[in-house]
Image (cartoon, rainbow, N blue to C red; front, side):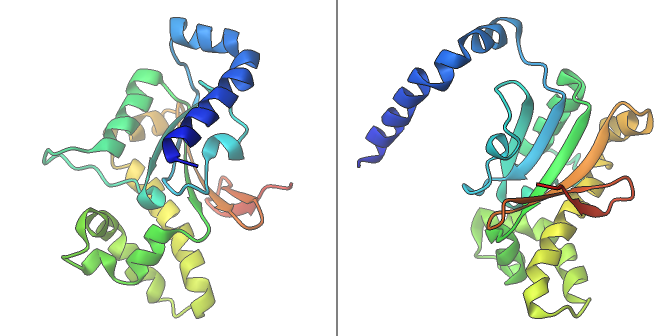
Length: 209
């Protein structure tokens, strides 16, 4: 099937299904604006859709997705910072009460960084982006873990680092310190549809299915 036709077919199914059931919700969101309480920072990977995983309706979550669900640290040198702009908007304009950074199993961005892409000057935009987690890569590799555990540990460690990086933004740290914003980590297993969320001690715990 031609891709354009595939998109149109999906839209037609949406109009006949979910939209009919949620027509009033869409009208309210379009008229009154959005008021999500949760921001979710996830990977762009097509296998990990936050709306599906959390069964979220339109307007419930403010979502930003990028390669390897990375939150860069505060950078005041200028430039175009899409993820940072989304965080700022979510916290300062929408007043979200929680930010979750969610990693996932079999992440290509993580695998690329482990393979050295973040040190490759010819790796383009992706290489430059994953170079943000080169230090995480070095920490994980220094642990001497079994080969079959390295990628998994890196996926978790990038979530932890991204949560730390969130606190480098003064507007985030201020809200966290005053109890108006909570930062949590998440991890999703594609194969088993298993979700883990960090507890108050920062440890990942599996959510009972």
